[in-house]
Length: 266
Image 1 (cartoon, rainbow, N blue to C red):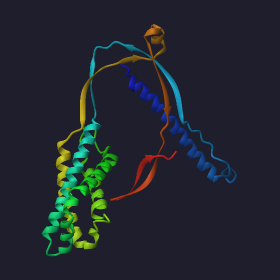
Image 2 (image 1 turned 90 degrees about the horizontal axis):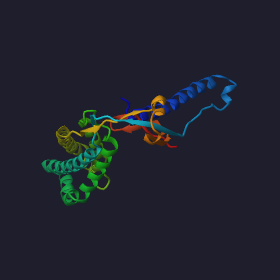
Image 3 (image 1 turned 60 degrees about the vertical axis):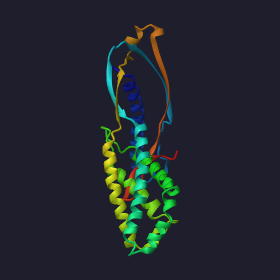
Image 4 (image 1 turned 180 degrees about the horizontal axis):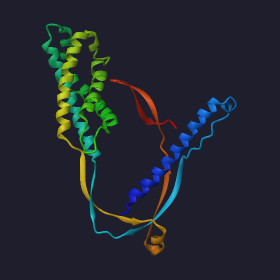
């Protein structure tokens, strides 16, 4: 049974593969040119397809069947990230205030600093921090879901702590760095421990895989079938396809540098 999405997918895949083959050939030519004393002064020939247009004609065959379709519910994932951001932010601020209160005898200045700002921390700053965290989770965590709809809680925890360290512990206006490394590290470790537990619990409770029943659509695109189909029963789709280019870029993360695939600057 031929499916429309599979046929279109094959066409798009062939388009991508064609550009990939051309890029590989240009790379091999580049190596040859670099090793040749004469050719190295010439431009390396390379063909690039920015897009293409094609028309697909097909006939729909009647099928009285359904199939089970499973896919990630990204709306549910985004809602989860929003709720998680609020919960993590509340936990961090509460834990920081509590940890600072526990060590008031060792560092009274730090305690008074956080206590005097408690109202701001629990209102405007909490909204700010949860918003930043949500944006980072949407940007970096959207693909941290496996095919079964389970969220990678380890990766989500890493993303959350990167934001907390940068936007809370290292925030210039809070000036927590001035209170001493030992005291700050104690607060940071307490927050990290509570956030880790919270993220694990919440991520394990949610699954973003959605399953539904869809009517199956069987189509024919071969010449013999189309020639036997009445013109009024033929379907046609026109496509304008553009090639999206990506590049590998080295990025610094909390766990060191690593290669990331990002959209190219065309």
